[in-house]
Length: 388
Image (cartoon, rainbow, N blue to C red; front, top):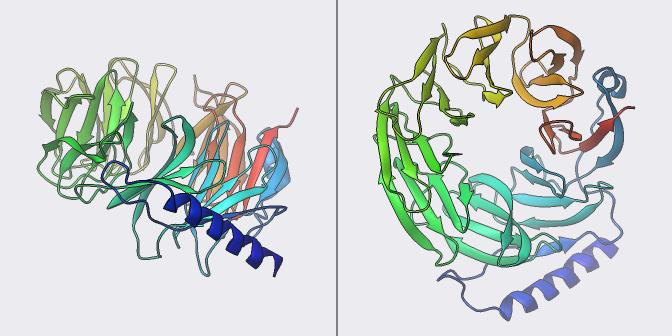
């Protein structure tokens, strides 16, 4: 009963607050009200029953367990973490904000229904107020980070299929129709766009002043991030389901055509180098320490020199995404086998390999020596800090 009354009171306050705001950027403020988690430590998620001994083997100890709000039969869709934010969205469209220091549920806000397709959650400073941007395929919500109340809702001009890369007050999306499209938060409208030959499944990515995108056809584009001015076009033999990766000088595309490609963002018309594998590439690569780390089916985890694509090492016992670096060691998580590895970034030698059968995902709040967050499909989140 107390929680119900709190939710009703929060709704009333949110409605009063929203009702006092004017139209912003041509978009009517609308959406669910936030339920403020006063005195709450638990939402409707199932606790993450991860093996703390296994996390201890890779150098971490549990600091807290958190419980975002989950709808019935809901599953975690996305988790975003950094030093100041822990945000979870589940498949029923509810967004929950957990206190990074304690795991306490600060607020939750159900924005739509289970049928609404969402593409990203991301923190943003909305006109001087700390906010969380939640993008669906048709609109973007700005939720106040302190309360979860709606600051603004803006419609997107086209159906988007990727999360945005944000440059200043511009959000640049890939669309289902094959356009790299810039949306202005200042005007609430489409700023510019560039059409490609086919839908865009991943990216775009910001690379040294440019935004690069890849279409399902394999067409590649590089655009000046603010104006959308064309730097150049390129092409590979198939599209990509992972985002392009920004390197020290170049950008890289891990493609369904079974190759990793390197391009100059200023002129992507010709590849700088190509590394071929025997299977389509579906795991997000990572650039770190002058290397590009790529998970392949035939050779396992591969370290490539960013400059020339030469193989520095391979380890066929390790597959998965490099999610961070801890104590000088790469941390890799395989979401299919539910295993985590630590290994040398210079030789690929494995130090630890642990089974985490209840863990659906892992993320660090800082790529190098950050805190580790793990979550299960049922919504339970746990924060792990350095063991020593």
